[in-house]
View 1 (cartoon, one colour):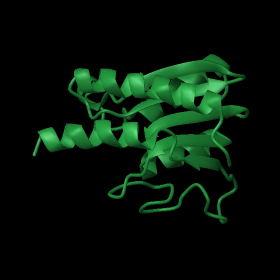
View 2: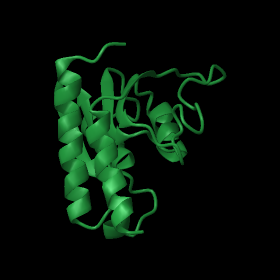
View 3: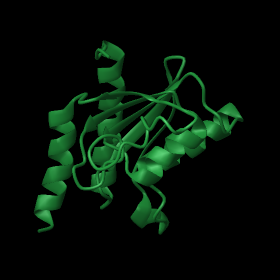
View 4: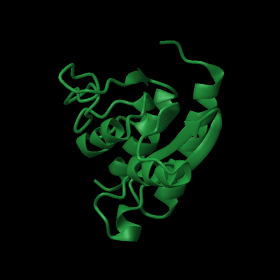
Length: 152
């Protein structure tokens, strides 16, 4: 699958959300979900702010998009996220039947799309997701690597 201009534009929005999350003291991950070329929801991680271990950027935008669409299934959507989703978030993508995921940087310590696990392409599951990885990967990797390097 080829990267198109809209993928870059929406990933830049996700990066803005990651930067805002970092400014709030959160792990800098950002996401947005798009339907018919329009952003339904955008957010960064809010686990600390919300006191909720499930408040990853992906989960927040999936919940908001489902509310706006008035449907727990999300055909015709694309989820953009700065880093490879974890197993919880990949599971939510499956449950929401999101057909397309675009992410920036791989997560070698917890990624559940291709790094540690391959949840979204598991042939046993009843939903397959089209995945495009590496969109603005250097920028996406840099923000999270800098964040953790500053805490070591």
